[in-house]
Image 1 (tube, one colour):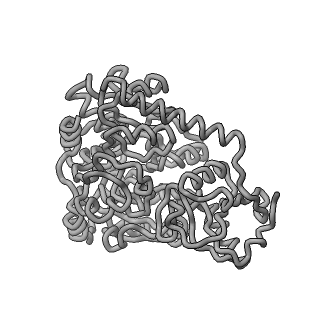
Image 2 (tube, rainbow, N blue to C red):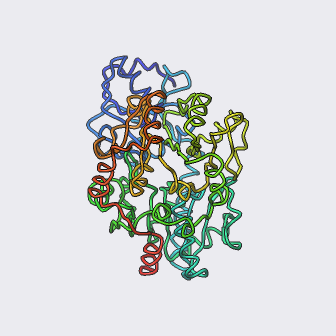
Image 3 (cartoon, rainbow, N blue to C red):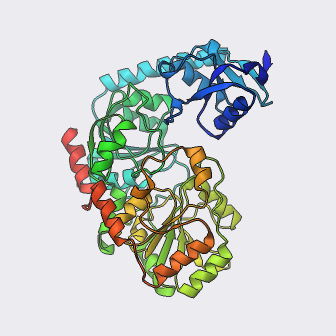
Length: 486
């Protein structure tokens, strides 16, 4: 039976999950006089977020915001010690709630999960050991791809690349038939894996059960400025190793977010290109070198814009592209846009471009602006860029080793942090270039780059030194480490 939200006035509450819908519900409850103690979330971490009932202060209820995954969130809360009687679900009418009830379908799902857990445990125990599995879901990010490729070059029979539910990523250049995208074949290799190598956190039930039985090497995908969920709240998970490009982050940041037996500063394979000459770089899953050479020959030096994803869902890029193109023409520069895969399709549709293209596409009637394929590796081009434009992305830390200008276009910082939470490092340890908040300031900063002005080289060197960012290629070191633990 539904109740009015007003019945929660003066109650001590937690709200789930820690996303925009949850925070909107938190504000709504606070406005009616409820005492919101914080947010409950199965994945995310933060000063106002709990992940387990053991962390909670005395409370009257947990209210779960309406949304597509509401039932899954409720089941996750049950698994983390919250009682069913304490959980309420916000209805489509945002002013209504109802007590959570476990349905027959949910009970059957729990039984299926128990069976899956038994099968995975038995398979890992009984089946003969197979290969090292480099694993991804939906799309294969660059660190896993290049780490696998290095391993494949050394021992092709010992490494397999698996993508579960791969969605249209152009990987035609892979050598031979080495990519497994069939669930049955994938699980045959996963159950027998000697080692699992990842660069993201995958939280599906079956894979979470699998990794309890396997040695896992987490390569991750960047040194973070923004808050991360990690896996530290999964007490049953402890990976063999967590790999990054910074000794400082491995000592001060990552152990609070990711559970691992050791933290290694072996580097990120994607960053190897930033330290290599063009002929030494691995151009796998990248726009061909010849196309990039043609771009620089036809137009001039390249600037690259790589903004991060925004959890709020507002991923507007705050650029007048026509004005920006005119500025680039005057400066004799090409600007390449590399968007997060989650938002590139929307941009492509708006610009009447192919969202699935593996080509570097000029924007219609904007000859100095180009769109880089979202699921492809831009680092071989980034190595030759004259400057990087970003916002809160980890690519800013990667690019420090090139000792080239970085411009931080943070037009929405207050709104961004209100959704994402406090940063993991202070701005003084992240900003190593002009901080701009509108397009006029962006043009001014780019003009200085065009004029050869650079006042931040010393600051970049200071951050590289403080964080002990790796200056040597990482893929060989990672391959050697994987071989040492198999």
